[in-house]
Length: 316
Length: 316
Image (cartoon, rainbow over all chains, first blue to last red; front, side, top):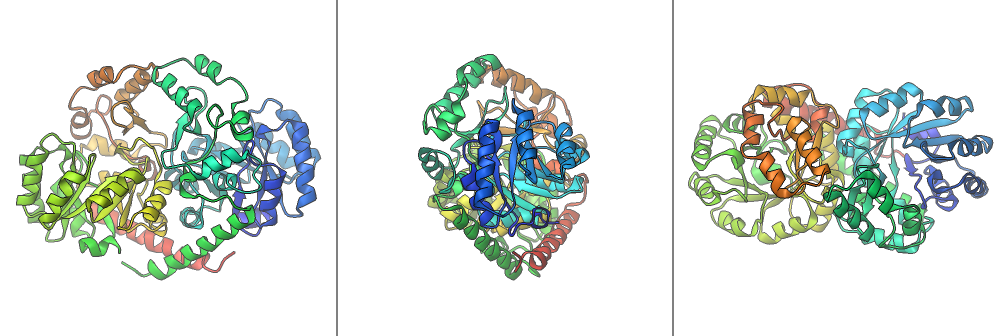
């Protein structure tokens, strides 16, 4: 089953729920363009989330959802907002899905959980989720300790689970979408490419930095706390040299302090902020409306599919 | 152009030249089965390489080649053996291709260079190589400092160079081969899958460990020296805890000592040896003759191509 059926959407494209980047404007634009827009609740207080849900409803009549990091401190209030607002699709990440999955499913909500290894995929399936996002190490933001790439993680999870698997990490165009779908993905989750959209709520400085990023411009940082893929700026480089010296988790937490993602991605401080983006940012260089991004992805997906048909079927 | 034309082989599959794993037996088996077998000169003294070249010639009349790490201490003698033996295909890695490419090409040798980032790809192209191997961070053994995955690295290099690009890292079956070829690769280089072959010269203990590896079973280690992807065993875990404490490069080199790859991969010490393998080892579990591996890869490649034709052309 493709996720077009599961979510009742036109294209098998989910826009990742991302802190400071995906509010109502991006989510509704993606849903209106035929993808699945997700509000990223990770950077929202419950009251702010309520506002974004209301605005998304006012701006699209298509399906949309909310992404919730399960380790969030006000998780009970956040889930109450989601359930009371009649949200029909929830993506959970960064935590154990066993507590919330049954509660959400009892409310008739479709639940998808994001994982970075096979063990968590099997746990999520056992918890009763409707689909899994298999996210490779090339993805931006929080990341798995196994550091397994999408190309290796995706087939492993597909082979060893029995529910739809959505591929994430390293996908920013229709060719890479075809690549993972030919591996058996039921759809794709795309984050970084939608950061470089007109409707993304991040600071313009951040979007400009993202589209100029070279390969090797990110680093999997803070492994002693929770691995997170960041743009190499002053903050990230300081963390790197602290890590090379072997400083403790506490020293790292103290230096990082609070509010670094807001400072960077929302307020536009490109040196002292924590800037989360995937490796795939090296592969695109334009900021466009979300609907144009989806059109471009689907166009190159079809070109790539036809090329496979014409070139590889019956060859060799 | 596909590498079937460049190398005059039946299938666009290169068997990676790997220390302690790919001697004459594996290289000739792969070439006889229609791929391109490579002798891995990295673990061979020039005299030993000569022996393996002679035996490969005696065992196949198909094209084969030699992989040479350019930082090898006896590089001049190694290259002399290669040139004097009439070798027609050389893959170079781990070093600067500008010195040797023109010398080899003047001898009529096809030269391919392995890279892990765009800058080195462009340098290799400028040096005059015939093709590039774009190797992602999921690959086993020596690895790039950028830690870019195959899914992100490959399209970037294809877009910004003008010669055939061979994909490497994370490819162990026909589906993943189709995935990278649909991204525009001219062929694939496969290492780990051929370690688990009957003809691989590694110790049986190592092959058995490889086919039982779970996801997350490897680690990108020794970043202060040269990043290398290793199986997490006693040696690798000790390096990890030393790195977490911030020990110096010198202390790491002293602990590692000499001969660890031989001890592990060739002599079969699974705890104290240095065991190089790619993440994709988690995705297969059988040891087979190289010819069966190639047959299985091509079968699933064709199945996957037909599935793309039937499923994705004209859908959505």
